[in-house]
Amino acid sequence: MRSLICVLALLVALPVAAEKVDFTLKDLDGKPVSLSDFRGKWVIVNYWATWCPPCLEEIPDLVGLYEDNRDSIVVLGIDYEEVNQQYLKEFVESHMISYPVMQMDPVPLTELGPVLGLPTSYIISPEGERMARQEGPVTREAIEKYISRKQQAGIGQEAVLQTSGNSGQ
Image 1 (spheres, rainbow, N blue to C red):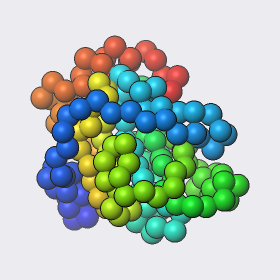
Image 2: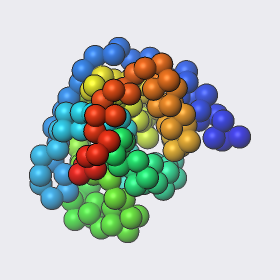
Image 3: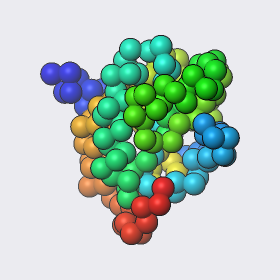
Image 4: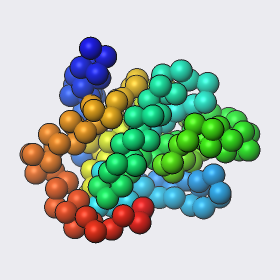
């Protein structure tokens, strides 16, 4: 039932204008990571915090989604709190988060749009366009269904096919 609710929530997620977006943040090793680095793949940008129970619940689904779809989907976790970087590194390691994690101070409006509650996720097309925003937890199943629906409509399919042999990111 919870999965169905999440799917419905993504389907009626607040529509966002399809415009190309970008940002650059440093990963936990201090290396700059830009959203545009992942053009050609679907990108799930997940704003979360270590103290947020719903955020922690969705981590295994996001890890599985990322691990099983590296050729076509990337998850970017953005820790949205003021926390010691060493603590965050240990937290990421202890929760076996394999996707890229960056950190930023909480602000009401990010480059992608508002983050009014946690978790908040944005889905970005392979062309770099903001497609959807979801406040509250997401599931792997809901994200896969959303992307599949968009691909059936012809969105993002060409870029994904062009990168099918490139799993370096």
